[in-house]
Structures are given as C-alpha cells and as structure tokens.
Image (cartoon, rainbow, N blue to C red):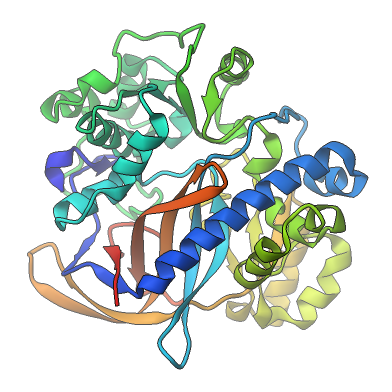
Length: 439
C-alpha cells in the first residue's frame, strides 16, 4: 500500500489501522449497490429538472444559501457519487444499506485503490475510471482547502496511468506556494480531520515526497494558472463552491462552456445535503420512475431542512434525530461528521440549545432520522503489527458509483470501523478494510 504513494497530510503511507483481511459482504449487496446508484442518479436528475420549473424546489434548495455562492445550474448530469452507508443485517443475515450522505466531491480514490492493491484484490475502482475516461484525460481541479488529500489524488493518478489513462492534479495555487504554506505550518497543523495530535513521523516537505514516490508526472510544479481551454478533458471538481476562489470557479465554468465533461457538474444545489430533503417534494417524486422511487424511500432516511417550525417535533423526538450542516459553511465543517449532533447523546436542554443555534446559522442545516449502523467485531494490526480485536465497532460503508448511461457501476467499496459511540470517520484510530462481495 505504501508503494502506491498514498498518504494523508503529513502522514506518509497507510495511516489507518489495517484490517487483518478484507470484509466480505453477500453478493446480493453488490446488486443492491447498483440499484441504489441508479436511483441516486435519478434523484439528482429530478432535483435539477425540478429546480428549473418548480417554485417549491427552488425555495427549498436556495434556502439560506449565502450570497457569495454562485447560483449556477449546469445542463450536465451527475456522473460520479460516493454515498456513505449505514449497514443493517436482518434475521436471515441479509445486508441492507441506508445512505446517510451523498458525497459529490469525494476523496478516498487513492486510499480505496491502495487497499485493493495491498490486499491483492481486483482494482475495480481504477479499472472503472479508466473505462469511463475512454482515452480522455482526467483533470482534478484541486482546492487548497482540501490539501490534506493531495497524495490521495496523486496516488490515484498513478493507478490510472498503469491502465493507460491520463490524469493530472490542477492545484488552485502554484505547488511551490502550497508547499511553502505547509512547511510553515499554516496548513496540516493537527488537530485536523482524522488526526487528533501531531504524530511522531510527520512529513511536510511536499516536494520531496512527490519526488520520492515518483508522482511528479501528475502535477506541474511550474503551473501558476489553469489552462484556458480544456478540450475533451474530463473534469473532477475536488472541492465545493465555497472551497474555491471566484476566479477558479470562473475557470471551471469556462471549461464547461467549451464543452468539457464534468464528473460533478457546476450546479450549486449538488453541494448541499438539502438535496436529500428534496426527495419529499411532489415535483421531484413525479419525475422519478416508481422502481427508483421505491429504492430511494427504502435507502434514504427522512431528511428535512432545519427551520424554526420544525423544532417542536425535533425536541419531542430528540433520540430519533441527528443534525448536520448542509453545506456552504466556509469552514469545512459540513463533511466528515464534524458538525454532526446526535439527539440521543444530548440532554433535553442541550438539544434545545443546539437546535436554536443550528437554526440561527447563516447557512442551511438539516435534520435527519437517526440510523444506527451494524456493530461488528474486526481484527486489525496495530502500529507494532500486533493483531488486535475491536469489539462491536460502529461501521460505515463507502462505495463509489460511476454513471454508465442508465446504469451505475459500484466500485472501490471499503468499510470503516470505529470504537466511537456514534461517530465514524477515517483516521488514525479507525480500522479500514476493503470489501469483497461473495456468498
């Protein structure tokens, strides 16, 4: 895994707790993932179409969006998404999936590939992306706000290159400027997402790491501006609207106008968890085929835009709900569970106070039905390569979905297991395992 060049911020190589073996889920789960992927893409299409003509959809999706967020709506369709799933097993041992997040600017491409390589599994994620590109070059428009994931994306570029696929990372600032900020400690300063305190081996010489792992072919050190024209390149926007400076957004919009294909289009509504709340709108539901609608109703928990009118019910039903920033917060708190508030872990008084605070935010928040995930025992290797056992760890499954016409291709599935009571996120204290599907 380390040989892929994978890393996270100043951590070089595999930084997570290594599962002793892949996690095996039933073959039927892979079929369910494909069904869910097709339904999620149908939801994104319906939301986009409803926004164009329906006042209720526009009102919901525009609620509390800050003035600085461009209200752009692209004519392109979503081509990639990475849902976060909670696992449920029925009495017959069948696994059922509940999607609590629909990440449209996902990380973990290199991370998921590194695990597949390390455990000797078929590299279906890199294979699927190479097929999707079909000879076109992939440009990863990379936001400095997410610079911790630089080596994740570079490692994936290398994986694509081994399949004959061209790709490169386009930083929104020149590499020397980014490297200098990191070396000065302006970026990558723990505590940060997944790393609570400064580890012993913390590598901040970005240029040396790129050279050491042979990743220089996928990033241009002298690139001070993005290309004016994208040609037939495929663009992956690695960052939400509020992660990029206006000139970077305008550059991407110029590429789109020229005909470049975006995996995650420049539609502002896609950056928000409020999209999941749109499933309840009649104008959205009638645009979705009945079989997709049945799948969505089964796999997406009730999600509501948080408003003052909703708080009495949320107070009465405190253990049944969680709260999250929906997006546009400009502080990178709307992803990774960092804004998650679990009603069951609050007192009545603290929950009431939190509801009031989240209602008063200058950007949208959502309330979502709480979905406890399956708790599993898992064997892993610690920092000394000693096998240990995590008992009844809280779980989360992540899987990339790539759109292929009317179909969805699930790939790169991996499971995170945490001993935290309610929060599950990748990090130095979580066990990670690639997932295989077999009976």
